[in-house]
Amino acid sequence: DIQMTQSPSSLSASVGDTVTITCRASQGIANYLAWFQQKPGKAPESLVYAASSLQSGVPSKFSGGGSGTDFTLTISSLQPEDYATYYCQQYNSYPLTFGGGTKVEIK
Amino acid sequence: ELQLVESGGGLVQPGGSLRLSCAASGFTFSDHYMDWVRQAPGKGLEWVGRTRNKPNSYTTEYAASVRGRFTISRDDSTNSLYLQMNSLKTEDTAVYFCARSTRYYDNSAALWFFDLWGRGTLVTVSS
Image 1 (cartoon, each protein chain N blue to C red):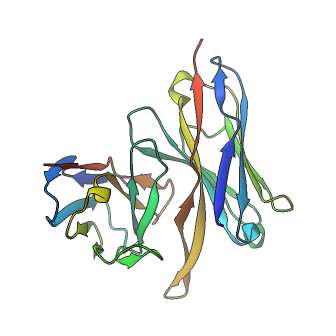
Image 2 (cartoon, chains in turn red, brown):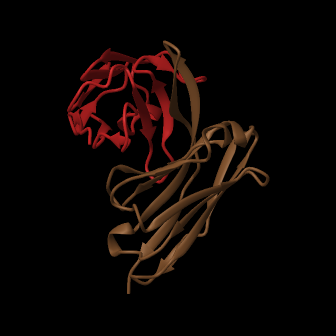
């Protein structure tokens, strides 16, 4: 199975900050990586697929990058609605696997 | 409106069975792969399994933790997805989400990614 490791597991940032979350795969997955946002008690929402392609309707403040084993999700100009937990997920091979999540909190 | 609505969750004893449903609306259900993903209380997301669409023979894939106990099926005539859960264990306690997977092409290879999620239904396995 491909293990997905996110870092940090949590971070505190102020409104207006830019933050970057890292996701590392235990083996190469090309660019078959997605990112999701989840707020407490809610369903996940899809942000990015193919490592860097934004889902329809997702604002350009979110940007993804990387290929192979190392990936990033950058959120620019943090707003109150961006405080949530973010997950990466690989779809290179079965079983599909998620990272452990990164909780973005208000400083 | 694009929508996935899960139902069927509840309290069940260890060793028991439960069948979850997911009703889809607002899109052509038969075009998509469909998945179940779960989230134990206070934990991260765990993929449960997938059903492919008719052109791909409705074949299924499962996580090792549920293989042989859970069965995913679909009914394209009613836009419904199902998860039959047998021999339930306490560690199966979670919110179960259904998720739509949509196809895109990368160098002529077809790939599928989650792009729509339901709100989830809670399954509690406890005596």
